[in-house]
Image 1 (cartoon, rainbow, N blue to C red):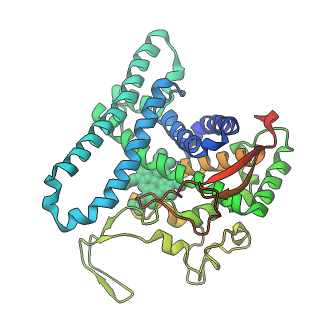
Image 2 (cartoon, rainbow, N blue to C red):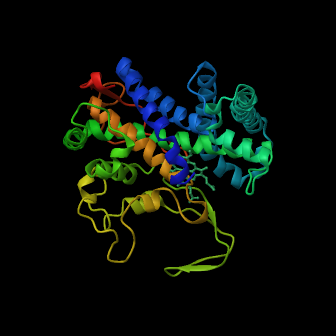
Image 3 (cartoon, rainbow, N blue to C red):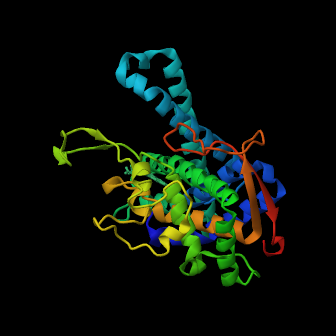
Length: 370
Ligand code: HEM
């Protein structure tokens, strides 16, 4: 999942960004569902290589449901179950867990089986376009027994299935937040659009090959990651030895959460942390006087050996979606669903924090380049 692998999929990401904006222009009131669908399709296409179809839509819907419900279930019930573990035998918990397990197995198996069948067909008709996905690559490596080959079909299936939920949820939450931030910060939006226009001349869509010229857009992206931090507490880690941190003893085998959100809202590193200010990254040095990195990407994807394996994929998916939206649409002010002003941003109480639904107007400004 490193940059050398994911760069292979840039055309998929560009294509999905274009489809996303087209869908958005057709039905702007369905922003949230377009965001979810688009981030889901990118990952499903990279993992399994199939273009969106009715079958894929069904998998995508089921995948989005699992992700949301499992995340909600974890947060809502985990504290209670930690304190009173016998409660896990109650039918209400068992039933929910069973239902989600069934759905999870279906979401893992259905696209995997499609790829397997597709590969058999591709071999018969010598069609190499089906062998490009991560699933096909791993299956072919497994078949040929190459060194480092991917292992059994079961482990490939489970590996791919474990990538989809965190990938879909975090990128959707971040892209949705982007609309809220742009709607509420029109001057930031205008400056980012101006930079994109200066690169493309307004005659074409931005591409991932333009990214080295995205100076302000990159600052917007970093500020988005900092402001929102989709996984605010990351995932739990375990101390494998006793450790003293600033006078606190952390015994061996303690479960530790890195408070990513707190770090990214530290006013010592990021003054006015509750303001959306991409400019802070334009003149910022790479390290604080204490030597800590200032780039939010150093924190937002977690820490250590289990750090997010798909940070490059997430970055390119989000960057191209953001740039394509800015090049073609103007995002108006955002309001609560009842039309009232948004006073405080509210998030879902889930492992991945999603902004609560909001309304915003989207006006197309350059349909002809889509
Ligand atoms: C803005 C986007 C994203 C954010 C903020 C994010 C954040 C994180 C964080 C904080 C962790 C926990 C790391 C730790 O244990 O310290 C993580 C793990 C993970 N992420 Fe991401 N992620 C993003 C996008 C993605 C995408 C696009 C994928 C897949 C396509 C993905 C797949 C994973 C997986 C599989 C893990 C578990 C790794 C392991 O336990 O070994 N993430 N992510």
